[in-house]
Image 1 (cartoon, rainbow, N blue to C red):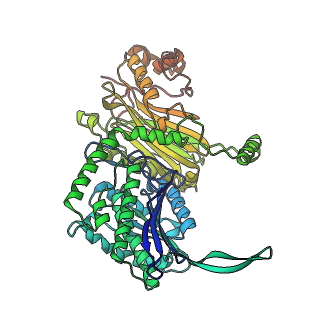
Image 2 (image 1 turned 90 degrees about the horizontal axis):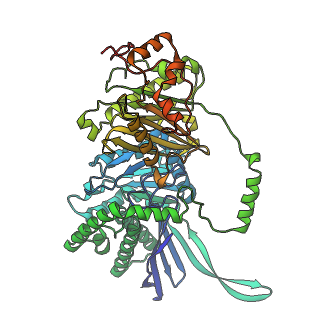
Image 3 (image 1 turned 180 degrees about the horizontal axis):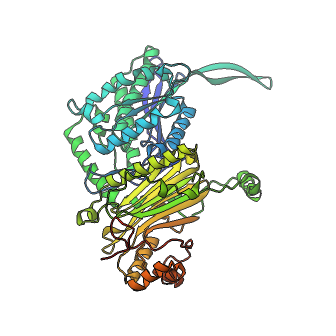
Length: 625
C-alpha cells in the first residue's frame, strides 16, 4: 500500500531549474489492521503498522537522492484492549520471551536482508509499566538475536543490530518537543555509516542498430547501507516526529557533501510533507490524523495544536472502541484472512498451473510425524502448598520413561481462592509461581534424561482457571499463530468464577486447541453444566472469529464437576470393590455425552482410576463431613 505525498516544487540552487522533494510511505499488508486489533508480531516475523518511508529529492540537473526508514510495532507478542480511559489501556504479553525469539529473529533477518545494518530507536516510556515491560522484552530479544553479535571482530561496532532507548516523554517533558532534536547525538554515528542513496545523470553516446542517439542514464554514486527502525507504542505520533528529524539529518548530509545549503522554505516544505505523511498513516491505523503534527509542521507546539491533539484523542477513543472492529473485519476480508474464506490472490495462469500440479503430487514432498502431548489438570482449592514440592510424579510419571513430550498442557482450577474480590479482579501472581515451578520440574527432568529444555509458550487465566503451555525449545520453529481467549459463565456470564481458558496454535500444518474449564458445581446441576459447556463451545472465539471447532484437534481438560449419580453409600461401596465399570455407568458426564447433551463428538479415554471427588482437605480420604 503506497501513500504518496504531494511533491514540493523547489529550485535547484545551481541551475535554477525546478527540483522536487517528496515523501512516500509503503504500508505492509502482512499484519495489517487497526490500532487495538493489530499489535506486535506474528510467527513469520511480520509486525503491525510496518511502514517503509522514503524521502526523495530530484533535481532537473539530474541528481536523485533517496533515504529510507522503517517503523513498526514492538516485535514481541502482545495485545492491548481499547478501553474507555485514554492512557490506561492495559498491555498484555501473550508469549514468553523464549517463545518469542524465533519470530523476533525472523523480523530482523528480513530487515537485514533488505536494508543491511539496523539501528533500533525505541521511544517507549520507562515510567509507564506496560511500555517498560515491552522495552524489557525488546532488550531480551536484541540480546539473544544473532545479528546483535559482532560480525567479524569483538567490537560491538560491527554488530548488524544496534539499539538506542530514547524515552521521548521524559526527554521532552521539561523543554518541550524542541528537545527531541537531541536524538541526533545518540544516532549520528549510525547515520554517518548508513549514508544515503545517490544517483546522478550522465549522457552516454550509444549505437543502436548502427544509429547514433543520446541515451540518458543514471549512475549510482552512493548506496544506503543501513536503516533506522523507529517505534513508540503505536508507531504514529512520537515515531513520525523522530523520523522527520532523521530524514532532515540525511538531507543535510547530502547537501553538505555537495556544498549546498537549503533555503528556509525548503525545510518548511520538508516538515509539511512529513506532517502530511504522519496524518495519512495515523488515519489508517488509529482513525485520526497524527498528534504532535503542529510541531512537525511549524517547529513549535501552539495552543491551537494542543486543542487539536485533544480533539483527535477524543475521536480516537470513540473510533477505537466502536468502529475499529468493523474496520478490522473489512481489512481481513479484503486480504482473505477470515476463517473459511478463500485466500485473496492475484490471478497468475503460470502460478496457478504450478500450484495445481504441485497439489496433485503433494505426497512426494509432504511428510508426517508423530508427536507426544502431555495434558494434565488439577483443582488447587485456592491453596499454595505444593508449589515447592517435587511435581515430577505428576508431570513426568514413570510411564513416560525417556520419552520427551513436545507439548505439556497444564490446566488449573481454583488457582486462587474464589472470593468476591477475586471474581471481579483476578491475581496473576499465583499463576506465575506455578509456571516457574512447572518449568523448573520439566527442565530438571529433561536434563536428567539428556533431552531438550522447555520454554513457556503462552499462558492464560480467568480468575481461578488457568492454562499453561510449555514446549520443547527445539520445536518452537514449527509453532505459529498462538492465540488465547477466555469465556466467563459465572452469574450468567458476568463473573469469572466459572468459565474457560483456551489456547490455540498451529504445529507444522496441524491446528491444535487446548481448553481448560471449570463448570457449575452441585450434584443435581448437570443441566447447568451442559449449558456452561454450550456457552464455552459456541461463545469462545479467537481472532478472525475462529471458534473451538475450527481446529484439527481439540483437547478439553478441567474440573467439569459432573458427579457419579449414586448415593454416597452406594458410591463408597463400589469404590471399595474397585468396580470402575459400574461407577462409570452412573457417571453424569458419560450419560450426558451418550445422550448428546454435552461434549458431542468428543471421546474420552478409558477411566483407570478411582473417583477424584471429594476428599477431606489434605488427605486421600473421601469426604467424611
